[in-house]
Length: 485
Ligand code: GLN
Image (cartoon, rainbow, N blue to C red; front, side, top):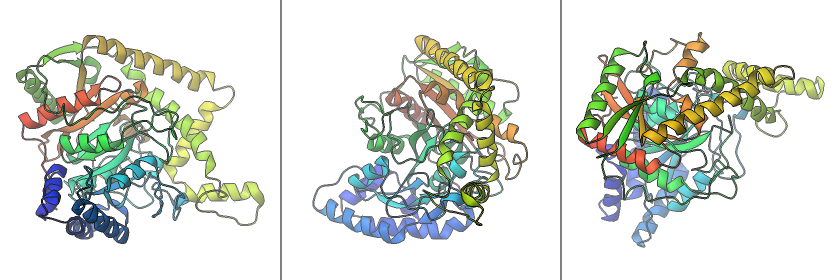
């Protein structure tokens, strides 16, 4: 299935030259999905008919000389984005068969461009998790090793790219959910600055942290997809009205003279030796490329995981209150009155991890504990944010590992939530700070598992981290590797 190994820019060229039609390409993707989804379980819903209809429309548009950058390109999206024509489950039983009456803004943007949405991708329920084991649709398996997790919560979005089911996907990142699965599956994933991409029509987990971003097989495709979805949206009051640069024009400018900071708190004991080695080699590569490496400090890093799990669960407990069996999705009612109906619906509809977080969040917000937990976490969040701004006075970007270890085994951490939560230790702080980060492949473990490198940028400096990522991808052989399946 050669077609599936091509980059979006190559596919665009072939579509433009008439060497290939979008219908042929879409069929190739659908065949690849049919052949591999039984192994990786990355798709919750495949929309074959709608995809082929969109591909036909794209072919007409290309023939008319009216193609946009994504016209005719098959893509898939995490099942957290509302879509008019197909159900949106958010990985939960409570939204089984929920069909939204409108498209999320990012979906509408993709459709306007003529992209072909082939389906909705598996994820941890309500985006809560780091392994994709918390999905009502069952776990996603890592295409590099089917015994291992793909990471989470956008596990389906990362695995679909690694398995070459589609060239690129959309995910969301609240505490690492794009970058950590991208690292575990050997693909590129970018979490934009809070406010860069509209979240209108994206099912909310923790609203002060959630962001939408692209995952792709290479940095350029990631830049292209980000450009297609970024921008101000009057329907999302947290989106920021600042111009979207053309990420492709500055992509190849290199890193000569850039100052790259290494936060010393991120190079800790307990870092897997293969991760340590690969990240050290990446640092050396940047030096050879002309960047200046400077040690910096983010002194409040130790508090980030605790702070995140108070704020994220508090916001989740409030956001998930809307699933009451009345307005959305599934209802369970054994005739025990209104409160009984709420209780039965939520008891049957939510999985264990979601229930755990609703309880933690409700507790942190309850009177008597609010000041001690929630308010304190907000103050710590400000300190963490200030750490980043102080570091960015000294350097242009920061370089860190994405995760402390390569992908772990399925089942390894399910009974130990704390261990699971700690797998996001390097990705969470940037969500608390609200700035941007990218994850890209930088090595392989001795067991043949991909290792990710994280680059963090100033607010709205997506162009800069993409540029640094591209420079690395082109100076090394780590990008664009995909497993046999
Ligand atoms: N793993 C983290 C969590 O479970 C982050 C999830 C995310 O970014 N959506 O909350």
